[in-house]
Image (tube, rainbow, N blue to C red; front, side, top):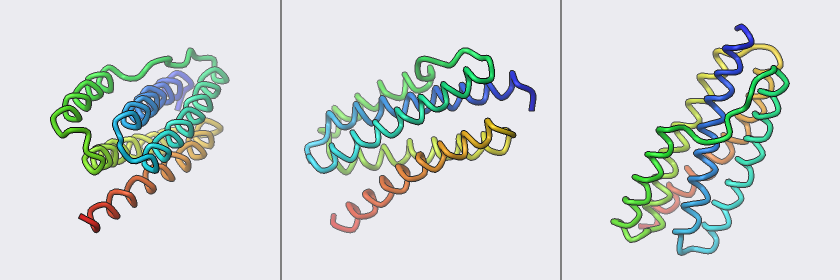
Length: 149
């Protein structure tokens, strides 16, 4: 894959990961459970580290890293806020919505790994491991909440 395409792929991941950071932070504010709030804030911090790693790789390749989320992500956050207002900021609803977003993000990383090569692929593989941990944690929370309701 040529360098420009690698930069484009990385920037696309970067935008989606920035959306993830924002999503976790926004959701943490709406959660009534302190334990869940801590999990979401920790995931936001971990995603922030992934964002910085991706930005570094874009710069290393000679590109300008994306500095905001995707346009689609912006719309998604507005919808999330509306849904939160309707559901009364229910913890289980927030976790379910977050898991759906995590599934999407995980797929974006898996698709990027199929396209990238060399050092960029190695960087994304390392980032993917962190993304996958967050995904699995939220998925586990969702299943645990469903089992108790």
